[in-house]
Image 1 (cartoon, chains in turn yellow, orange):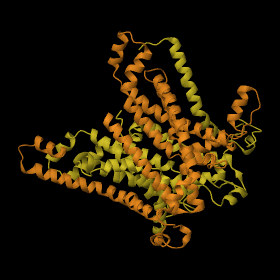
Image 2 (image 1 turned 90 degrees about the horizontal axis):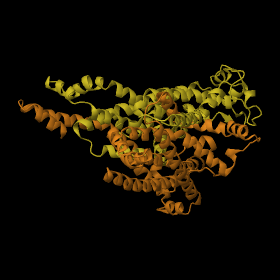
Image 3 (image 1 turned 135 degrees about the vertical axis):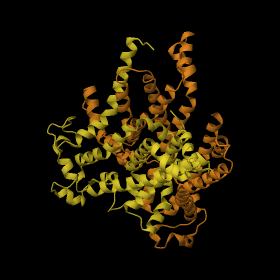
Image 4 (image 1 turned 30 degrees about the horizontal axis):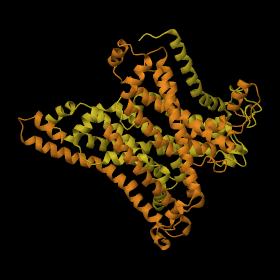
Length: 286
Length: 314
């Protein structure tokens, strides 16, 4: 459709304004991570958008290569939290994907499982805070508090609805002819699933897994409740980077925030076209 | 059911196989859903029963007895009576709804406006689209920290205002009770308008081109086409987008808690923050279980009413 010049100008003006607003917080944190302490203070004595003397000190600081009294006060570097976040997110994703994919296939092909889909939507509806008390009790009974596998288990269950719904829409769309050909050849149903369906669905599987990983990696509340010391995750550790002794460690927190923010943003851009389906439970199949 | 019809229609010349195949499929299907059923039992059904049990007692992890023996401090429905009189709970609920009724419409109209700009092609569309979607992929607690920095009294927001107005502004956004809630809302709008944008744009692109062209030929203005063709066509999309945001804002925690910790005082204490605080500070877990149950029941009623209405419409 042909548009007038003034419309085009207005469009670019509005979009650029939106882009600027979108980028301000991100740019501030990204540059903050490279600023030395004197370039930013809470009083705002020296407010600079671009680091005048860029430094990697903040990164060195949180990973403990810089000897400092502050890191002693913090008692731990960010290495453990990064490992904790990675382990719990990856294994949580594995649990969600294995169970979710199997259930989605069962439901999509054989129509079994009753009201499982609805139960999974309901599971997603409730505030996590409102269901955590019994989980905390169970976890302390089972000795799963403050362990990455305890976190992974909760993550797996919390993100299971997403894995299930994404994979179900993908299975629903997959042509059955491919599978039927193999069935005629005399393959068992399970062999068909393992040898034909899963390889064909490689791309959707990868996208769903990335999606679920982003959700697990983003968690703050569950990590806050279920870890105390040894296995705190990156967001929990980041939030704890301020104390009466050290004050707000702006630069260090920004460096850690940048490390936490980059993987999901990159993955998110990679699976952009699946985001709608993922977040709407396939209610919109665009 | 569908597997059976497929099997019988595609291979009529091979009579014994379809029945076994369908039966095999059914069994495999049941086995494949089993892990999920077990997990749901483990994480939803059993904990729910446990929650009901504990909510009827006065148990706390400090008691030194296991939760199984919580019946020692059985107190019937006292927790639920307390909850009705808990002014802090109702204030937190009210605050959550306030955030909801401000943020959801704000996100909706901003997103709709942006989506309209993105319907047809223009140079740089893909790049701008990717940039605009970025906020929703940023870890919420990290987004909370971003806005925590931005809203410091000496921070960049005040810096920008100073630059634009010429006055030396240093507003303490996060320590003023009224402004703190506004700052929290701004952060939520920043992070979640992209999701609305994504959903609405997906809906708008799905509107058939020929209908719009026909309307143009009939002399309909752009606005008329938008109101009479586009909006009605994406009604269900709009309902879904709004529903998702309403549900998610009800759960708001990460961003807000990192920004303000629920403060100053209780100025930004939403329902999740309130529950978190009494869970970790007061440790009155029986009471928390009662509040959680109350919320779960209320939400299920509301959600089921809403779901049924959407199901009837579509």
